[in-house]
Length: 124
Image (cartoon, rainbow, N blue to C red; front, top):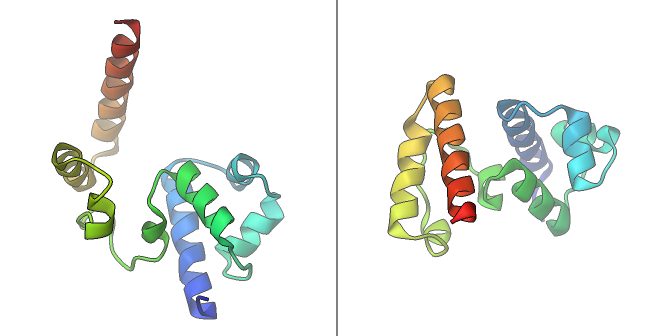
């Protein structure tokens, strides 16, 4: 079990990532099947997160569960060995480059490009 100080840290990571994605507490809470009040408790380090809830948050926030526990700037972080087991070398290189992009407009443009490429692949 993680300690109280870990809960506060995890809460900060959840809140920061939620804001980074432009999600309101209400939208994130709805996406993981809880009330926004419960999400407020998690973000404030006052609520206990079970493994199912951690997985839901990980999925919706589009980060590995380890992200919630890591004391690193995600833009500077490299992919750990545990994460690397699940992705190809090409994906690993792509993620590491993506994390270094600091300009939000560039990130948005890249996301649009990726979505267009995915749609093209579906039509093929």
